[in-house]
Figure 1 (cartoon, one colour):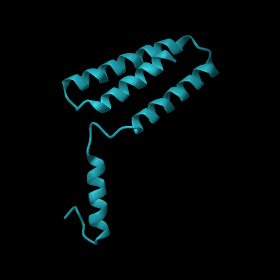
Figure 2 (tube, rainbow, N blue to C red):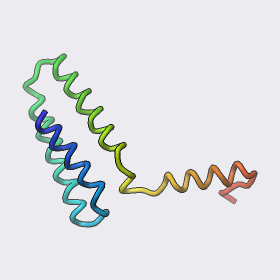
Figure 3 (cartoon, rainbow, N blue to C red):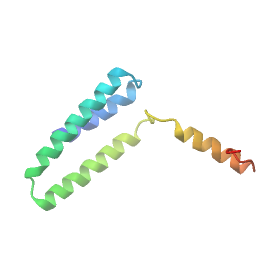
Figure 4 (cartoon, rainbow, N blue to C red):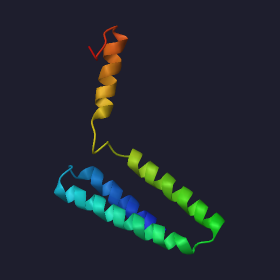
Length: 93
C-alpha cells in the first residue's frame, strides 16, 4: 500500500509541473514505483493479489482524473470538431 500511495503522490506531482525534462523525471519515478509494486505483488496469494491490482488500478485512475491532461490537447480538438459538425459544417473538408 505504501508503494501505491507513493505512486499516486508522484502522479499528482506531475500535474503541477509543465511537460519538461524534470516532469519526465517524475514519470520515470512513477514507472520505477510501478515495477516495484508489480514485483511486490508476486508473493501475494491469488484472490488477494487480484483485489490489490483492482484497488491499485482504481486509485491510479482516480488520481489521473483529478488533474488536467498533461500530454495531449486532443480533447479540445474533439470539442471543436463537435461544435463545427453541430453547425452543419464538416471540419474535415
